[in-house]
Image (tube, rainbow, N blue to C red; front, side):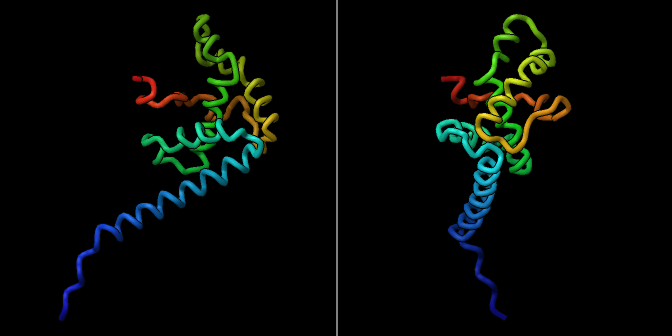
Length: 134
């Protein structure tokens, strides 16, 4: 009986790449479905956020929503200024809820944030740890 040859590293790498490509495809499709008018430069940032190591265990659709909301909260609202003024996170998030939804509406969003959405409670930095250190 002849032994099977060991799997070649190139084939294993192709399988890993195929899996990453499938997730990336889901990320792109989800982002487009959620906010079809999201500017390209901002879409690139949200995609980078979704690809961070600590978010890879989440389903792609959930990671996209969480990152999109975190991105809008930090970049398009007064959230950080409210924290700097001494507001606690829950209060600051309450005050920026309508602003987040305004941005989603401007990008023709198909989903909007509500008070009990878990995305309101998740903190995802817009800049990666590498970018923050530099």
